[in-house]
Amino acid sequence: MKNVVLNLAVIALLASTFVSCKKEKTFNDELVGHWLSTQVTVGGVNVTSSYAFNLNLEGSQEFSLDVTTTVPLTGKITQSYSGDWSEDQTKQDITLNYADGDKKTWDIVSITETSLTAELIESNTRYQVKFGKQ
Image (cartoon, rainbow, N blue to C red; front, side, top):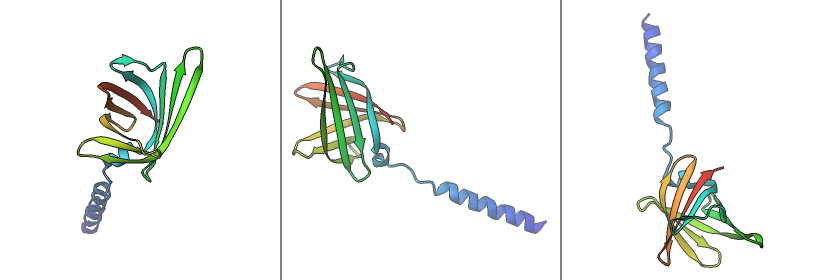
């Protein structure tokens, strides 16, 4: 009987050790992935039907971004960008360093396992993009 109780205690201890070893996701871990825009607003105006963002943030700190613009009478135009990215957990932002030397820092308004909302203010205009994780 003592052996059974002792064995159960050891098993319980081991089980709690494995549970406590579960790694907490970092801000960086949450950002890495393939994100597609679900809503785009510019200056408070919903322009989702005109703009789409396809953002891929790699664990290697590289990114690719396709911005598709729908123009009446012309159709869809896609611009592709790439470069490196970095995050600042304290500021809750992400900086995209484009291969052409351009640099943009987006504030992360909210992030979950399946969604990301980012904002950029440029020339006194607020750009907000809501993404869904793919």
